[in-house]
Length: 395
Ligand code: SF4
Ligand code: SF4
Image (cartoon, rainbow, N blue to C red; front, side):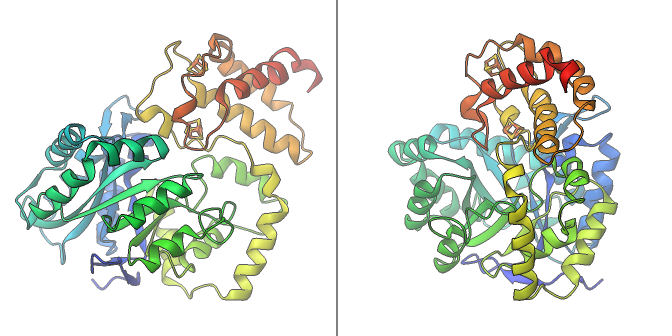
């Protein structure tokens, strides 16, 4: 079947990948593994040829089954008898020293079921593996450069254990991102960018998307839809702005420096809508300007809220057993509603579901380094207690 999704060149890798790619992070948030296999097969059926996963994308799904994203991705590729081309797999590890790098990479290869050197395969199907340092920041970049890890990554590429090297990063790491791009080691980068937060693009001190593009580094765009909390918050925002999901995805697809947008859909129905957007005519400059103006009208409502991305829980568990993203989720939705002048009474009731967690927080701050959005988690939990706990009757 000829795919309806256009292709773009993934920088110096020379690979041509679909403009719309699939982020396998949310497979752990589905009800069952059958649902995960359903969407993965659908993605491949539609001609999407890049799947973005990570060693850390693990967790219990709603049926209580342990889900390892890499295992599911590997299983689906192995099960396919008709694949027209090698599927490009991005996976990421948290190994920043040479020994950790080797260990993490070895586990990922095993979980994905990748075999071979140079020409890599899962079962009978050839794949292209792009191995990422996960979540580059100042501390991790210092470890990578001082430990000699980059040489280890380059050696893995030269030996054909991986095909290409890349890294992901989040907001506010511009100096490290630029330094990493300047090292000339990396083939691909993954950055968050969306209509409501353009700080790694045109609104940043330097446009990192362009910086990567100009160095012929392929650019994967994550968080195009702003994080998992967007569906709920959207119900509120839609009353104030003329922006829908299609517009948000179309906005990212229209950016000339982005190679592929990882839309992070959970269900076939969501991904089929993403495909319709990707297959339609690109947005024009006047559409882009209108959308930016709309988004900027409510940008203040979006600051300092938890996006429910769950990245914090990939490598960290609160020593007090506080399910802090659950507390932040209720508090963030309360904040958005309050900032928009809406009735917030329902949040007193919702707070009841997370009250025990909020009250267990001793404000030790150990969670602080783990939030990708640099939220001050203990302060937000304290604010939730103060604003939603003791003042329930006055909301
Ligand atoms: S500040 Fe609170 S939520 Fe964060 S690690 Fe400490 S006890 Fe847990
Ligand atoms: S606390 Fe930060 S990292 Fe964790 S879910 Fe919220 S936004 Fe994501």
